[in-house]
Image (cartoon, rainbow, N blue to C red; front, side, top):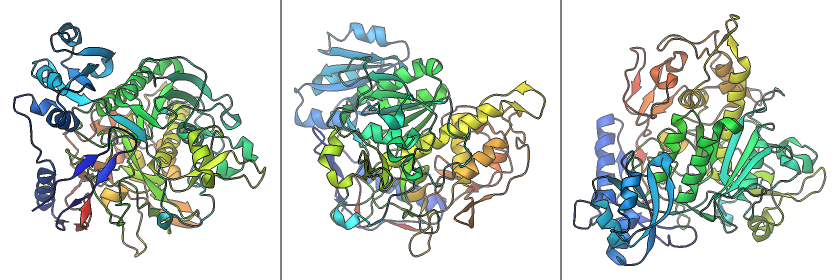
Length: 587
């Protein structure tokens, strides 16, 4: 008998996860056994009591819970409708007792005030595709208990970042959708636009960050380290990007799904004005429905379709905080978006060497809930990362022990934080440098001909292909549900970008010169993993060396496509070698 996972305490504060007891489940070495085992696990976990009526499948897990427990209490929901049907459905809102809060053209959605009973009636309408709670979102940083803390120095999180001065993301716009950005010396001149969505209405205001999370994230991406005397350990990955601050989390670090969707929509609409090529989302909420109906996931997919690379945090639900038992399927939304680059947290042990790197225990493991997508996509430094803080912010005031004074200047305006929130901006900064290099090459083959830019799918594939394997203390590789394709490798990724001709015909070889499939860290040569996780499959071989349809277009990552004969699909790698679930699993 299996006890169903539950999620409680979602009305306020950080979600409380109730860990479900179940027998050990071993995922076998063969693809069919993996799929059967996974179907059993998900079927057992999702055996929920649905309300009567054909609309049950249109309601997400939270709305169904409200319908069972408080059917006449008012809740905020996001209703997604058939393309072009928003106007028609808007006219019917009074009939269903709904009050319109806002609209989201990017996902054909409307945010409404309704009772769960009214939402269930509305879901019966043929033009309504899904009804989701306007769920609370929070930043994905952690306050670690003492037994998970390690006594170590400042993490040099950019030691694997590019070392050539011009690789600084110059001119690339990065939208940081978070708690805001404080306009301080380390980010001076880099914040080119700022909007506040916390009130439910877009407002153009001066840059501000009452919580402090967004400033830390932005500093990891682009901080100059000015207040620390420009010491490298206090600098960001891409110091010359153009930051666009989109504030969705309030001073308590809380926001709403509708606010995030509105911010993504703004970034899409203004991408040309600010050259927005990257969106960083170091926030999320537990997964309540499949990716195909999740409002945040669909907003992320819309951004990728127009050519924006979206980097998300994986979540910090990788371990039971009470027992220390690892759990799987803890990827949070929108980290379950197929086309997003979902990043887990790596503990570098404060060294340049990759030999002692480990996946942080709290980093969420895959697969994604409901869909079973192979996530995270890769891992990056996220443990005890030092970056800029606003001394007036909530995080700075609440956690004085996390303050990190600069040994050069003595300034204490830095915090050392941990979480996948810190890992995602490392990758976002790296993506910006990749796009800068791609743009500045500009011409190929000496012919003086313009070439198309690399697509988000191509960038994701390059990052995965060049990632390096992460091993446990016992010397065994972490499974793919923990490390994804491996640890992000800036040097390798940029080597590949420099040698790619995106104007090559679909399916044609697009490398312009040979590659050494390894990178050197701390004097040691480390081979690339050369693996790409395409949905639930592992792509081996020379897939990255040809301009396949998957890289040449912005189709949803993981969709069925016709691959070349030279690609070998893995059958027993994605889910790891005999992954053993502990006595407890997430959700």
